Length: 204
Image (cartoon, rainbow, N blue to C red):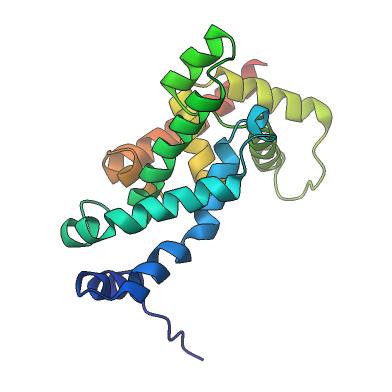
């Protein structure tokens, strides 16, 4: 049975025409993806003080307010635009709630929203499995530790790209728009990141 739901472009057209229900559907349709993104980056030290669902709700509320301007201009695709709002929100959350932490943490937050420890573990599992080949289903602790060490040795931008690709499940096109890069450059960065990881694994 064909999907009768309007696509994103249709919803944007309806939003420009003043259809508030279309605008509401547009921002809430992407709630699961935003929640995944927030879970990937929300620091475990904030788990007792910050509810990821509240962060997502704040992002959607801001997006809803800014949607008419976006729908009129459409500088990038919708989800990368939405994710940019979420990224800025996460920076504010980390700065606010980690303000009393040690100075090194504050510098870290100013530079980039880190990938959470739990998400690093998930990324380790995914990449370790890819290194063992499809015939091997179990990943031993030694290999996982080698992958974690290799990840730690990558540049933050490379780790973030891998997290976007394999944890957030962004397409390379979405990553390109998210990072203000061309698709060709993003493909090259993705390939190089995997090559650096592979090289780091052979060096450990």
